[in-house]
Amino acid sequence: MIKINPREIVCRILTEVESEGQFGNIALKKELKANGAMKAQDRAFVTEAVNGTLRNIIYIDYCINSFSTVKTEKMKPWVLAVMRCAVYQLIFMSVPQSAAIDEAVKLIKGRNLDGLAGFVNAVLRKISDNIDNIVLPEESKNPAEYISIKFSHPLWLVKMWISAYGEDFTKKLCMADTLAAPVNISTNTLKCTADELKKALETEGMSVRKGNFLSDTLIISKTGDISKSRAFAEGMFHVQDESSALAVNILAPKSGENILDVCAAPGGKSVLAAEIMKNKGKITARDIFDHRLMLIDDTARRLGIDIIKTENKDASVFDEKDEFAFDRVIADVPCSGLGLMRKKADIRLRKNGNDIDLLLVLQKKILEVSSKYVKKGGIFVFCTCTICKKENIGNLKWILENLPFEQCELSLAQGAEPIDGYKCAVQLFPSVHNTDGFFIAKLRRKEI
Image (cartoon, rainbow, N blue to C red; front, top):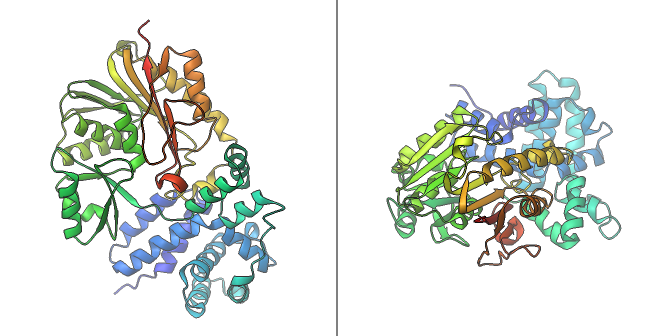
């Protein structure tokens, strides 16, 4: 019988993310599938260790560099992955020193790196002995550097957020990003009520509570692999963060209308719109990748939805035949993703701030093109999963100044108030709303 070492799998994933540019969630899913014989306890360990290490990676590297003569940027990829995994266990998982360190040394020797085993052992023991004595930059003198290291966010991002929101708010925001995001689902109201779904999930052993904003959103824990749930197989729900569901509710599609979702994949907004419309009308869901469109089709079939038509089409390229063709259009434009760091922790490793200006060019092109598809008097919602004023308020201001749209006033609860004086827009924060960091703006095309 083949023995699967969960720590080795963790380190393999971390190496793929660091050295091969693989996305953490994709690498994790691939390895869990390839090692399906793992015990549930070991699968949970792998998931926690991978996501937790990536969420705290800047702090972990700071700890390593504080006690190692060889700095992290000079280490062999496998050695660095093993040490990061071990430090996360020592600091954040309360794994006994002997287990975390001895297993790390075995992983080093297992790759024929015996000459480095003593070095790894010594550094990890120093860290373990000094966990309560890690010296960080003084917060009062250098708050940005302190927040960056303590809560593992790139320094450029911390400085940007401090400039926009202040030190205290930024600290709380970064702190929230170090915590695992809860699983949110949207009730398929074509098949059941939220109360019926809640009861069904609780029968399967899950803990369930209602969403913060929407009565049909449920927040669940003790889930395991939710795709193996009976309620999932019966099409009673789809996974969707409440922030994304809120964007569809703000769009407010009506039965019989013609709706366009220009950047639709993975399809949560399209299927929720169909459910709100009682599966009556027409929804066109577009993306530029066929495999992602197939995912939308599969989800719609599972949910019993037949009004969604998927199309492979570039949202930045104007299609003249669609001008003024849709009652409502929603554009969840490609963005920096800075509101998703609880779920996609490796964003910390991928973004440097320079790519935002390039994204702005694409965003404006998509907004300009997709806005032309809205009927006169129709509704246009644009949203992002980021916390960046240039991508959000900056684009909203640009639309109002350059395109024939006016603001639609939002009425939201639970502290989700219109932002920066714009009555049509809201910015959600993990630290305030316990959702993804998400921006939503609702506009109406002028009749002229």
